[in-house]
Image 1 (cartoon, helix red, strand yellow):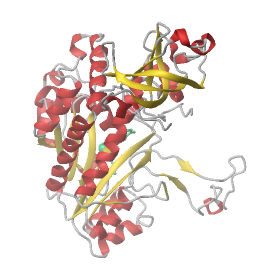
Image 2 (cartoon, rainbow, N blue to C red):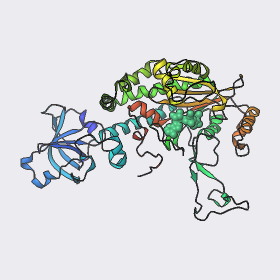
Image 3 (cartoon, rainbow, N blue to C red):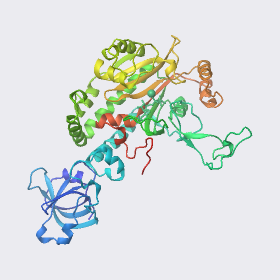
Image 4 (cartoon, helix red, strand yellow):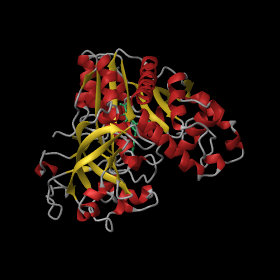
Length: 478
Ligand code: 4AD
Ligand code: MG
């Protein structure tokens, strides 16, 4: 008989109908009650087996972690805690699980640090099941948001020849024999001999290629993996992360900010509407974690309230210049509590400053705009004041920067001048500059870090726990 997923069974009226359930044993109590999970939902289904009529040897094999198939009748549950249960008629062990050796047998909840070392099994825990179902829901909602607005999903390359973004160190891609590198006459590595006949690397962003399609199809977005070889060992950085980058022709900075705000609100609302079970579990989980922390580190709102707060409140828009004034006169700055003190206009903001603005000063998400040109990328549109660019960052509570974006410099002469000022390779950027030569248009876009969004939506506190297999300095197991 074909199996029915637990999610479906739990919402079925039990009439004693025959059903088959397949999944992994979570617990087996009193030689009678088997709690089974199949990943379709955070909820388990209870299967009740008649031990007096079951072979002793088979009962022994019903251990935590074992994969089983049970067939029986779906009946209203006699016990508390569940509406339905399966009265077992037939049980087959599909995969034994040695209770002694199984790492998730532990009575106490295993730490997230330990689970990272067994990322191939952590998928079996309630926490990772919940996180990954929410991750899927968010990926789906992202496509829905853009599809509903007439955006085209563009697949930008993973291997690129340019570091035009300048966003961070890159991973090289090569098939050259590292023990026998070909050299040219000047003694440098001869990349002409390499696979692509040139130097290549993994992309840090699909933006520049995305722009080429925005200036043809109008509204586009990318959604793919990006790579940064920075040695950032933080709870908010990965070496491989997924980014969503919409790019819109005819959008100015204000339109860009509006879209970013609507996008984040839509995603939080989608999670609330579609991931209730998992969010409730994660909410409780975060509360338990919080309880072990000192008072001042606990969140004021629970996870679900934080999501509602985003949906219901407007984001604060603030220029970089206004932000510097606030930060300069803030208590932590005056009392020298910031690690990086704010003294002059022009400095880059650290996450401690971003979080102060969001969590202490405004107590809501902030969109900072018009940053100093010196601390932003070459492609951002130059403002008339001669010192700022039309950049914007969206800052979220507990996260800091969740989105970075800008209006793009669409004026050929200005862009070329900036490329040269910064000593960037004008020749390699020929195709990007061409866009400004042939039918240029005002346009804007931004990048949302998918795992930063996931941190916010799941209430998890380490970015390594919201992606199935995290890649960070010193770690590429699995
Ligand atoms: O601010 P970033 O570097 O902007 C860009 O890459 C632009 N090309 C985006 C655009 O305008 N199309 O990165 C965008 C976002 C950040 O706001 C952050 O959420 C996330 O990507 N991000 C990271 N997430 C995880 N690990 C890292 N190392 C990240 N670096 C950036
Ligand atoms: Mg940024």
